[in-house]
Image (cartoon, rainbow, N blue to C red; front, side):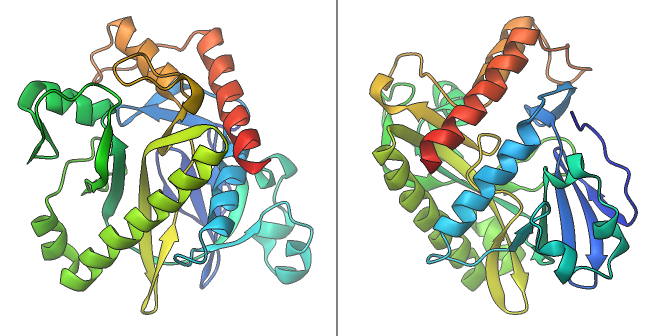
Amino acid sequence: MIINTNLSNKINQGKVRDTYRINSNTLLMVATDRISAFDVILQDGIPGKGEILNKISKFWFDKTQHIIGNHFLYMANDPKINEVFASETLIRELPADIARQSMIVREAKRIDVECVVRGYITGSAWTEYKREGTVSGRIMPKGLVEGQKFPEPLFTPTTKAEQGHDENMSMDEVRKLVGNEVAFALETKSKEVYNFAHDYAVQKDIILADTKMEFGFIGDNLILIDELLTPDSSRFWEADKYVPGNSLPNYDKQLVRNWLESSGWDKESTPPNLPAYVIENTINRYTEVYQLLSQ
C-alpha cells in the first residue's frame, strides 16, 4: 500500500495524488492509496485503490477524447516509457510499485474551479435541499426525493481547495475568475462529458449520479486534467436496484462516508480509523465498477 511518496522533484501533494516534475513540460502523477471524505484525508489507506483509479481515469480519458482533449500521455508502467524518457533519472529509477499507480501527463495551467455535474439529487445537494429547498443556491421544485433524477444535469462548480473544504461558486463568480468564454466552455464541456459517460454507463447497468472534473490549459487549448470519472470523484449506482427515495447501492466511496457519518465524527477533528470490512468492501466496489465499465 502506498500512502506517501518521497521521490525527487515533488511539486505538489494533493488529497490523493503526489505530483513530480519529469522535465519542463511533463509530470509524473502518483495516485496513492490515500482516501479523503468530507474534504479530510483519512488516517487509513485503501490498498490497491491508486492502481484502480489510474486504470479508470485512463479508460475515460480514451473514451472522451472526441469531446475534449486531456493531459494523459502514458501509464508509468508502460514499457515504452523506458525509451521515451531514457534520459530522465526519475523514470529510470521509478520503483515498480509506484509505477503501477502512476501516469505520465502533460503539464497544464490548472483552472482553480472544481467542475461538478449533478444528474441526480444526492450527497451534499440533497442535504442542502432538505435544509433550504435549494441546490447550490438554486431554488428547486418542492417534493423531490433523495436520488431523484434532475430533468437536466446541473452544473454546480466549487472552489478548488488542496486542503480543507471546497466552497460553492455561482456562475457569476466563475465568470469573474476565468472570463465569460472560459466559464461557458467549462460548463458546456463538463455537461457533455457527463452526458456521454452517463449514457455509456447505463448500458453497463450503472448510473453515474454525479461527478467532478478539473480543467487546465496547454497553450490556448482547454483540456481535462487530474482524474476523470473515478469512484473517488463520482457517484456510481447499481442501475437495476435504483429506486428514488430508497437506499442506493453504490460503487464508490459512499460506504466510507456512511460509516463516518454513523461513527459520530464531527468532520473537523482527526478522523477515526476505518474498520477492516469498510476498507475491503471499498476496494472491492472500486474494482467491480472498473471491470463492469471496461468489459
